[in-house]
Amino acid sequence: MLHDPNRIFVFDTTLRDGEQVPGSQLTTPEKIIIGEALEALGVDVIEAGFPISSPGDFTSVVELSKAVREPIICALTRANKGDIDCAAEALKYAKHPRIHTGIGSSDMHIKYKFNSTREAILERAADAVKYAKQFVEDIEFYAEDAGRADNVYLAQMIEAVIAAGATVVNIPDTNGYCLPEQYGAKIRFLKENVKNIDKAVISVHCHNDLGLATANSIAGLQNGARQVECTINGIGERAGNTSLEEVVMILKTHQLNLHTNVNSKHLSKLSHMVSRMMRMPVQPNKAIVGKNAFAHSSGIHQDGVLKHRENYEIINPEDVGIDSSEIILTARSGRHALKHHLERLGYDNERIDLDQVYQNFLAMADVKKEIKDDDLLELMGVETENNFK
Ligand code: KIV
Ligand code: ZN
Image (cartoon, rainbow, N blue to C red; front, side, top):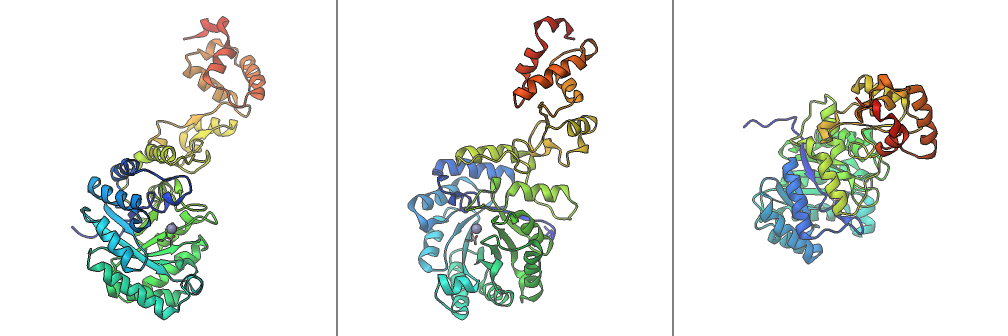
């Protein structure tokens, strides 16, 4: 099969980086349920855990490797033999195993985290890849804090790890520091300056500390990266990771000539599943999967959407697994929205004094925040029952 240069590989790290959220730990059976749902969604890689970190994480990687057979199963390590041995052991049942090893690449990390030098860290990076390569063919290298690293040094490091056998090179903006133009330029710089860069896939891994994780990931993809690392609902440490559903729907909505294998109709279901199991409510205005993402509440928008959905919707809700958008009745709603709901409840608008009903509705809506079906029925009263169609 010919390699498709516009295919974006989706690397889901909900079960590893996403699970680093305090209070959101999952049991192994829960991880398997999510892993199977991710497989059905069509992700290419599932980062199943960090096996050296705890016996529970080790077991989860083993069990996920047995249960989920289609995507690559990836395990995280630091750049040392103990971590790599442990990951290799945990991955022994995986059909498509990948070891994800790496080390800090910014001067900040080199000096204050490792108390080391650029030269020594570069050597450790290449040694870790060579060591991991004995166990599995597929090795991803992460250059931690690449967002703040010097581009020339970063390029040297990436060149060294590709020479050592890395098949994927991950350029994390670990602290969510970069602007989209900076991050895109960083990926472009690596693409243009690293010898043999085409032997590896460049991966983007962005954090959301400045609310730019998705924008940075897209900038990276537009500049030559072909793998995106993300989590369902954008969960992750601090402000979280790049949100999978946002990236997928951006690539579907815009003609960037880039595409994934994800079946977006599963997105809403997976969002609910992860939110429930990880005890992490999704903010109502969250793009794509928030409760209000397809809800219209102001009169002007409701009128527009009822005339033609695309007046105020750039995404068809069915594409993310939601039956239809919602017209919410509040004190900001107009007659058109009220009429729509009355019709839906079976009333014959020809036989209703809509002006009067609308005045009563506004009085009720000023007191209640949202008018639900029961409220509408109460508002219409039993005496209007003969106005049903
Ligand atoms: O954010 C980061 O740098 C990471 C690496 C461990 C891949 O999560
Ligand atoms: Zn991360």
